Image (cartoon, rainbow, N blue to C red; front, side):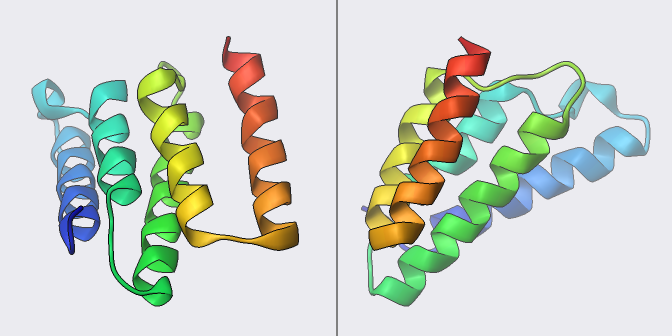
Amino acid sequence: RSRGKAEKAFGMLLEMEMMAKEGNNSVAPDAFAFGAVIKACARTSGNQQTKRKALRIALEAFDKLRGSSHLSGDSMTYDPLFTTIGNASKGQEYTKLVTQVFKLCCGDG
């Protein structure tokens, strides 16, 4: 388990996006980069507040991935996203998030 790595990984992803927007397309994030951020979120340990922050990061990274015109989710993104949801949510929120993500997963094949 790791502490703080989700934030660091997401920061690197944002930096890669910024560099790509500035013209350095060789560092444009791919599905693997998004998956690495979400995996770091899934491995986050600590109190519930820390896990909730990791969930927010994972969902933001996932939204960025889904917003891409040329990338889509795969097992490298969906599996750790489900783990992150399970680590950080309960009850109705858990059911809602899992249902939404599962539908997207089915759509991506």
